[in-house]
Image 1 (tube, rainbow, N blue to C red):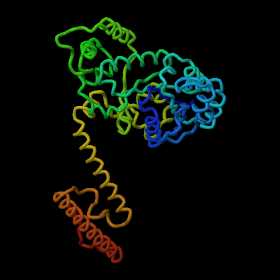
Image 2 (cartoon, rainbow, N blue to C red):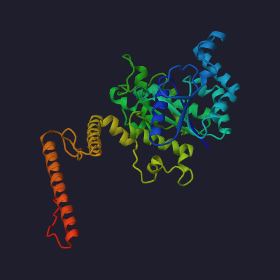
Image 3 (tube, helix red, strand yellow):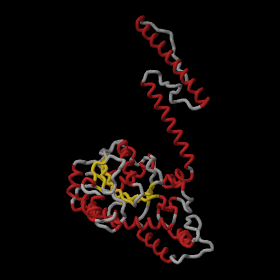
Image 4 (cartoon, one colour):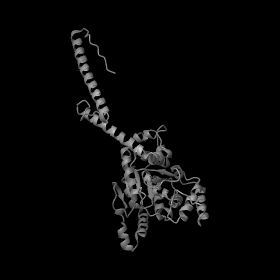
Length: 393
């Protein structure tokens, strides 16, 4: 039974970047993965494409033949794909049981009210695919209350339209530190509860003469003329109680790990037969695996980003020194290369510690040779050697 992610989202949300990063990540955890491009306008992708809809129909051809604009051309192209679904079915058969990422177009009409993409997904289900929709949203929407509310409405409508297991993801979370400070912690935006607290900031944005602001509510308190509408919208979102967000920094290994764990739970991949997924990833998915909740994300990317960046840099340097030491040992020089053996540090203290380690290793080798010579002599003579080996501590 093959599994698949249906990657949707508005233009600029990072769908192709996500597919590229996820495909590389899955390769690293030994999960065979293929990427299918369903965007007829995407003529340049950074990932290896296993199946490309542009081999069936291209946006340029449709715009020229049907005299349509870009948006209308994409809708027409998806209708063509729906009518020629056999082409997609034949291409997917060649992929076997690969885990598939479907890179979908960015026109929001396709996953809010147009039926072609939804029908294609349902036909994929009939082929036996276990699907999960991954809806990407640029985390920039958090910087303005109006953008955030719009993103919530879009996410809610997409969930109702697609009618499949669905995860909403705030992408580019590592860029939040470059934006104005948020009035609430990150968990307020990801859990989507108590949205009434956002109303004063929304009114401030709508009534401000100096442009939108997300950090200071209107003073003195004054409701905008849209106050009733704002309240009705947030109540509607809360009544459905469907929308929530995961977070993603696509270049961060831990962030990708936590998101894929959530996706695997939503799709049922994690609940496969015992031992079926016993790879590096299967082991990491066990119940005692390390988790990273939204408070950790807040600390990593907003509150203490510089500290964590420095810690990560040091970890990479230490890993590089260890790898150089291993490479040197495999070359037969005792694990020392360019004055480093992976156990020393930088500066005078590190150099002194490295020298002590090298001297200790030399002494140990000399004693080991002496011990082996004594054992050989003892074996030849049948007597004791009188040599006692004392290891340094």
